Image (cartoon, rainbow, N blue to C red; front, side, top):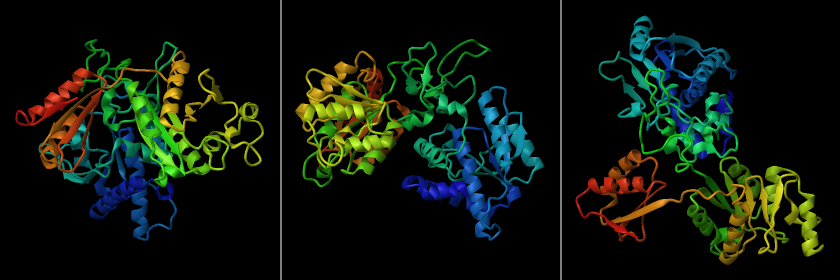
Length: 505
């Protein structure tokens, strides 16, 4: 079965755990109810697409355990419910019907409201349990567990929620790992799809473009899953002609430069860092530099002096970050493998750069070729600056820095900003506004209020740390909108007695 095979062969341990837990819930439900007594609510969105393929895998594995299958994929007999609406996106309708045809789904199409349609269906069919693609954080998920009876006032049935504990990241990890089709809207910047009247592309995925039509990155590149529903803003309705937020979390709508988010990955290369021989100063400094121009570092790693290790990390980061920065492992020594690793992530070496290096340092290089010149042909750009003896290296969205200490990095960073400010490559955007509070309250006292606060302010980064276990708890608030940061601070203070928190600079 291709889904189970893809997950089994994946090296994503978190995804494997989520998958195995979901499959357990599905197999448990199939053991409790006959196949005629279960149904699956499919709406064409990413969550229900994940659930569809989990159900295919779960049913297959359930049949294998019952010795009813010889390992060959069998038909999918679980009844599928689709609530068709005039306000649904045409792309959702098309994807739903195409998917039904591809996998042979037994579709019950309901064109009335959800509750009335469900009541009629349950009267005519022996359905006792319905699989739902509900996740924690969804408006309908409050109070639900993996098996939850329907709410009072609704027809009686068991709600089965196999992906209740899945995150936005988990959903996309599954879809991309299994290489299954999903609705095309997600490749156009939509991250959470409702009706045509309350859904727009997520402004946080907007791409700078010289054309009149705004472009967006695909949904799986959203760096913070908490902002999944930031695209739920009310568009022009044919009924009232108004445009107002459907759910206002303090986020501006499309074209908001203030809420644009650019992400970077930082990769250090060096066994000496991993062995603890030297302290890594460049990684933290790069994160600070990026933060100072309004960027978010979504990933910071250190890898070994190994070509494959560098290539794998670059390949992983360049597809999910706007920019990738590498430092360490640059030079002519046997351990300097950064350039070769980047070359392997992209393609063949660049002969022009090799000629430049031979002119610069002569023919004194190790091995048969100069490892410093192992960069991808056709996409390598040398960023020359009069203050730098060796140019910075740019390969698409990957920047290779040759700095070996903080002073050199400061100089290279300033030169990079100067070299790229005109073309918008390393754009400086609105910087983060931040506030810090300290308190002597215990972690237990603050844990639940802080968790609720994160849901109330999904556009803020709310972090906690202690400089010592006996010292005060430091709570940091970061965001692009100072008024939202201040509102978050005030909201937390209101949850406790006056004087519980002190603001620090």
